[in-house]
Length: 292
Image (tube, rainbow, N blue to C red; front, side, top):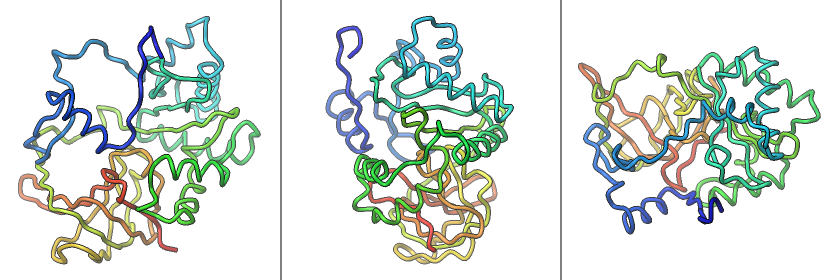
């Protein structure tokens, strides 16, 4: 509740689309570059722009922070000190950004910059092992996360828990759930809109070995592959990489590890080159898991 208006979040992507199609179809449009329907707000319909990058400084200046806001700032300050990453490289997103948080809400943070993300990851790993204010998720926490994400059709809980226990970008700080999303700075992005075309090619399931995990901490996260086998789908269309635009698929696998992945196959075309990639995270049946 904010200013007398009640809000609700729809986590499932298909649920979001159904709501928009029913009530706000103008926010759905066909994108020729992506080759499919996307969700977006026309510029002339934007009333306010909430910037995650500006929120930490706004909270630092505020004299009326509640306990969750106080702990969010404290978490950023600790990591900034431990990693030598400046405060300006952190952001706050989620319900805290728009003032719709409750006492039990998550602390959703952003780290800007590929190199900064690696330094924060390293420092956070050390803090989880040595600082009593930081804790990995318990089995009960993981079960709650598993159910909230609706992953029963995608992955067994045992496999899910094994993967999540390795992660450091999610856990608890001072009793609050935290989640980090790491993104490149605009200056680090070389692809320009329209230079590459993407064509959906249907569902696909593959196995393979991760050959490069250099962007596995980022959102979108990318895993380059080798020795790929197509388990379901056209055998001639072997993806050379797995990509996800959802933060929960970051930290999922490392170089040298074998994975199984299920998602939407895309044909990626640019001047003089073409390859296939697997997009994971758009369906509750999508999966990206390590094979022991």
